[in-house]
Image 1 (cartoon, one colour):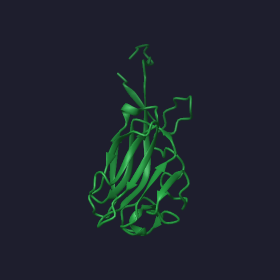
Image 2 (cartoon, one colour):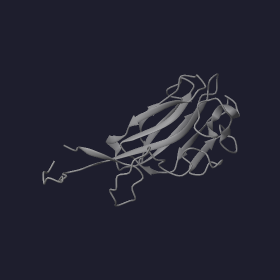
Image 3 (cartoon, rainbow, N blue to C red):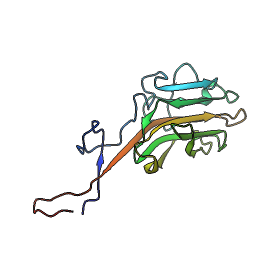
Length: 178
């Protein structure tokens, strides 16, 4: 029988399935407005606006890139809060320093529950996390660059969330409940 349906951009309180791609969890999750709106910055790792260049695997014209301010600069970028779905995807690369250059999913109490780092290729790679254990919770993304040496950078772009809704039962046109 039918086990679940995918919901894309459903208005709060509705369960109207739509086809399409996963949605941005908040405005400027892709940095395309050219500012740091909905991102809270600390430290000196960030220029006055998201980076603009080509050839790094980014989606669109702009993305977060701490290398543009020099490897010795450090800082964090934390997203505005959003509601966790069943999965979260983004593009990322960073120096291969798992405790110093990474992206993390952060719960409301500040706990980092999922983390990933890069491979120092300077090319953004697709990453997808299963966030089902945090479904419906208020979360944030935290991008961390605390490495001051060679390859001390993080590149990040194009955050998308995917929501599923579990159906308890469905009655088909023949009157069968599945």
